[in-house]
Image (tube, rainbow, N blue to C red; front, side, top):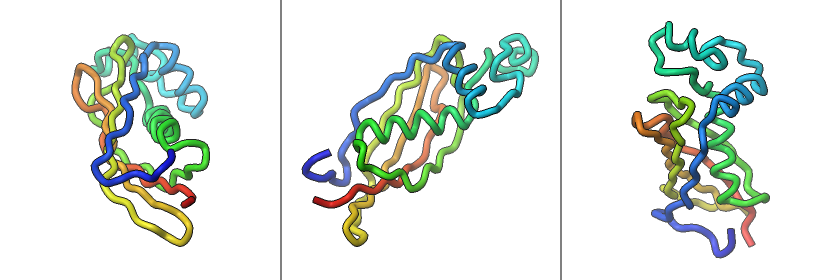
Length: 136
């Protein structure tokens, strides 16, 4: 992440292939054993189209999206997202983002990035991430 970033800069798109394994692994890793995150029949009986990703997994992929763009020196200060449609197997999640605000705090550049993760059903997650980087 050289040369700094400006308001309006678009982040490189990231597409996550959402599979049953991705959903189940994320649920297990975050110790979320709710059946809707590993049992398709249970999820469908509750009115969902299929088993679906939990918010902790979504937050993890939002952090990855930002970190892949910002680089290893970046520090994610805040993730504030709202969930919409479910992330389900067979529907890739497409992550996009845009720098909305930048400021300098001491020897750091602080950026507010608007993010969106969407699939064929609509917006899965929308919100903002605050990330800081050392200057220089």
